Image (cartoon, rainbow, N blue to C red; front, side):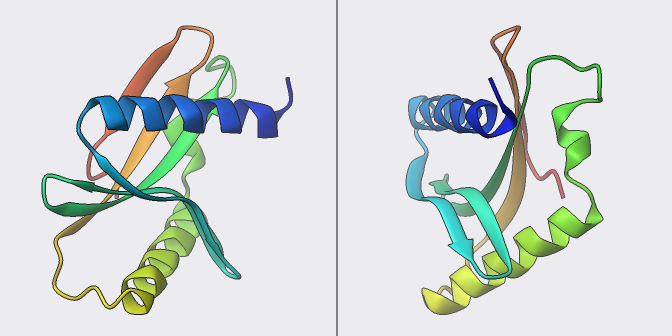
Length: 114
């Protein structure tokens, strides 16, 4: 299984997890020229921008460690564009990371990751 396939599987698992926890999914794979957000959801009246990271094991680090400064900057800028484009003002927002450990079938939801 290549990294793209692992990522798609991880995103499906994250979506199922979010739906089971009463999240309202607004967008998946929201993409603009300068970046992408894996999942945009409404959770408890907050607009949540979610990055999903999947790994088979932790030999190369934890999934959330792959969300570096440059990735954060792209996500934040993409979120700003999404809010502007959809005329969303003054909404409470947050940025989460969902780690998917495929081998162990484990999910770690990091709320307010950055």
